[in-house]
Image (cartoon, rainbow, N blue to C red; front, side, top):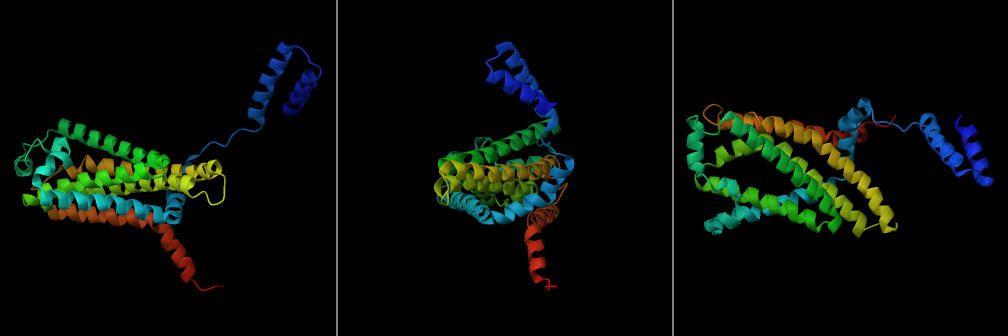
Length: 291
């Protein structure tokens, strides 16, 4: 059918036939093509193959970009922490406003007495943080188009806020309380943000180092890799969101600092065992004796 209609369309056009007939046949050709050569739709098995194997393999290939992204965030965290040590008054510039409304000691006391945020407030706060961090990840990815400058700034600034906030709690003797609150969901969440930052740096590489290709071609190739990296972070964000709405919001004495930190380390071990699975696979294959 597709070939027959295509032949008729060419015949009509070649002989300057009726515009109405030509338009009709053109529409018919389009429909016949769609039926004859249907586009490949992503199947659940394809999504699972990417999540289980493709994403770790891609991260292994782009591990340098990931490490660079992590270092940018850690640099910001270190700067924020030291900045607060040297000048506590800088809190008004370095600490997010919502964390300045209540003293850390007062907050810990309220949570211990059960007078902290209500279930509704916790749900709203968790939803806000979840949405905010996805926005941060997307911006870190999209700002790769600035040759990575915007991506680097986004990672540095978010690390800056984290480091400054950590010092505010540490100064009150609540470092353990703070990390027990942040780490359970923070490990998968910050990892996801850094992977999104790595995706932004991949885009920047296409612009700054096209490797002999026309810049547009290099950018399109790198964009495919970058989008796949960004897509892979969804699993980590979902995991972080679940933990953030549950374990992270249950504070001592209901859940001890030791338990929450141990839980966070277990989550982190699972996350990085998954992300490094392709490194382990390659190592095993390399270590296996040749047949």
